[in-house]
Amino acid sequence: MTPTPFLTRIVLHNYKSIASCDVRLGPLTYLVGPNGAGKSNFLDALRLVADALRTSLSNAINSRWGVLHLLHRNVGQVSHLGIRLEFRLPGGSSGHYAFTLERSESAAYQVGGEECYVGQHWYQIAQGRLVGSSVTPFPAISQDRLALVSASGLPVFRPVFDALSAMSMYNLNPQAMRAQQPPQDGHVLKENGENIAGVLNYLRQSHYDALQLIEEYLAIIVPTVHGLEHFSSGPMETVVFKQSPGGQIENRFYANNMSDGTLRALGVLTALFQRNDVHTPRLVGLEEPETALHPAAFAAVREAMVRASEQRQIIVVSHSPDLLDDMDLEPENVLSVQSVGGETLITAVDGGSYQAIKTHLYSAGELLRMGQLGAGHASVRPAPAVLWGPSPP
Image 1 (cartoon, rainbow, N blue to C red):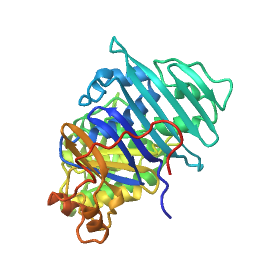
Image 2 (tube, rainbow, N blue to C red):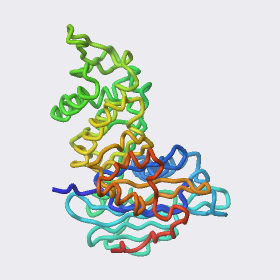
Image 3 (cartoon, one colour):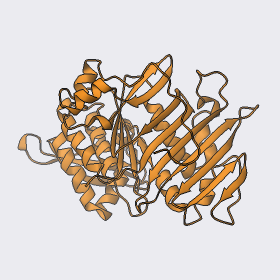
Image 4 (cartoon, rainbow, N blue to C red):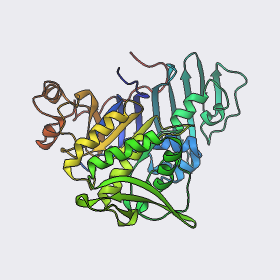
């Protein structure tokens, strides 16, 4: 049974280094390209949406140093950016959510337009005014915030808000995971992984099967580790690793004694298999999950990502040929990311690379290693896709 993706299509306009992007996603998608190509900016656009819905649009923009730092810099006097996310929800409803952000003379921002369509319900907003809605009365609108936050109080739009606000992007930091932390909420792993002790403790209490899955894959990646425990001392908590090196007597080691590779592996697995009773992330983005791992562990990491993609959508940002050395990886699951003249171009792999992967002549990793994992029409900036209105076939 083919897993159902959450985000089926993503359109970006003038977001950081991305002048224009229009891509379709599957359950598991790899964004592949060299360092500095702009792969992380794609994930950050999704993170911006989630941050704006979870906290506030002002906080999401200010944490990125203001709207001027979000606007694309290589296409003249850019005054706005746009994001469109097409989705399919668990109940089968499909639709899209789109908005634009504009700058003013003072470099402050405002929401230029916003619309949401889900099933038979919709709303459209332009320049701070409600153009129309299938639901009346509609909540109050302000140009300094996204209307979906207010609309989430309406049952028809709540599933869209829940799904988009729960998107989780990860750039794991072993130092943050290594340090003892005050007890934190363990329902969702934080971006850098700092609350991993709380997450694992929550899984132990509420979703033990998910914890067992994490331990199972961690034991494959780090054979000397065969279990995890939660340790608290006063106001602090951390993870304890149970180890039996060389079959010796079992020892226990705190997280501050573990290597970067072991901690990153644990973080990746926890991001993939975390679960909660409220809003489990339906989309997980991983920044370079291969970092600090031995290439021998990549097969287990790939298998874990495939398994996790049966329950949630996974987007992986990577420049590692070894991670992509998998003959079972379909070309439809790979997007090529290149920087051309300072602009980030994100496209499907080209015809030659597509056929080589599809016919198992080469793996995506082998093509990347040879510099042959090309992108379709890489030298041509894609025409801006339409942000508004129904999705094209």
